[in-house]
Image (cartoon, rainbow, N blue to C red; front, side, top):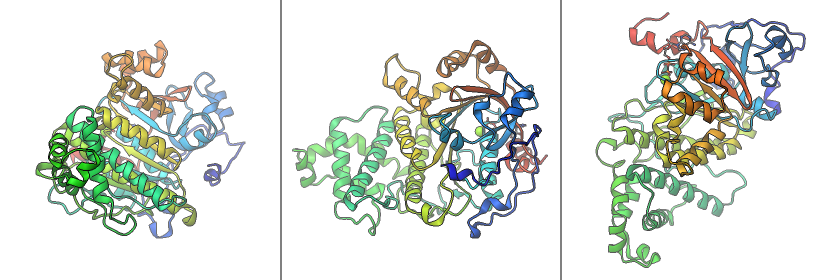
Length: 475
Ligand SMILES: Nc1ncnc2c1ncn2[C@@H]1O[C@H](COP(=O)(O)OP(=O)(O)O)[C@@H](O)[C@H]1O
Ligand SMILES: [Mg+2]
């Protein structure tokens, strides 16, 4: 990954400790040139750690490096704070580029995610937002010259979570066939387990697999249309004698045993949730754009339904991304670095099956240069509320371990102990959590820590300030 940073000049005599915030209004991104970031100036700052340490010896941690996008100032000092998860990963400061951002409502989590995303696009990072339940990333997309894909009842956009994506180079047809089958199967199983609120029975698990196999057996992954959810539901409801026979059952027995599974998946095909994920994809991702946003704010339903819909949306984007990363990057010379932002991820992460799915997704994404950023309210959103030794606890710990960078914004007092234990905070650090003001976060990067005030640039305000948009004015 070293070559990704050659555009950042090194200047060992650089002594500036004040942020250089030469923000200009965001121009329309020049996507035609493949260099969308050229037209946009965001606050970029660099200082040698030696100088920063001289300025603030007890807080500034030289291991955190001096390359990256400017985030803000270290609290109580004049020292700038910059961040680049790929660089820190390449230097073994952290073991993965993923980020967990936790904090109560309204303290500036989304503002931080948006401004870090905006600033990163200036370095050629491409940003993907697979779910935007509050519809607040559209402005960010427009500032970078792209329109969000809006999903909602009565709208034309539809995405198929069963899309296979493109065959990665180096995979044979057979291998790929198996891979796509496994991916579809695990997505459907996660959706069903979440909807049923229990693990699938062995019969149901097998029913799903044989239904999928039956539907896709004759189709050509590369040319034929991808299967759609209604076909899966129909196959589960009316298994053929042949599929049932592979499980030594009659069609009637199999249909009965997979009935609840079929009925729960049917929610995505009829009623409130219909028309969004149950047909062929209408809008493809634009890989040349600096950012792609799937606006899910028009999706209605209960909490579980929203979590299911967000999962479908992210599954689709993740598949498409994986294909792009393996298929096109080398040839086009585009930066392979991607930031995938799961804003309001707590909705998905409250469901064990979805945590499981997300964790395996993140493991895959690391090889593709993807940094995932998940925004939650509290650490316990990861499903950590479970009996000692339970799967919930193990999963929460796993996902936490998969986020080498943890940023904690203000927490409710009843969350302080859990947070401190999970992140290994000192008493002094833990005491701060309840009182952190807007925009201030405790950053744990690998073994290192810093308290950082996120500073918004003048040009970012109109794009990021959700409060102002609600008031109908701009600062
Ligand atoms: N770093 C900051 N400095 C000043 N104001 C901020 C900052 N971050 C956020 N805000 C203000 O707080 C509001 C709410 O922030 P938001 O990011 O939507 O919170 P969250 O996502 O944590 O609920 C923003 O619209 C903005 O007006
Ligand atoms: Mg938010």
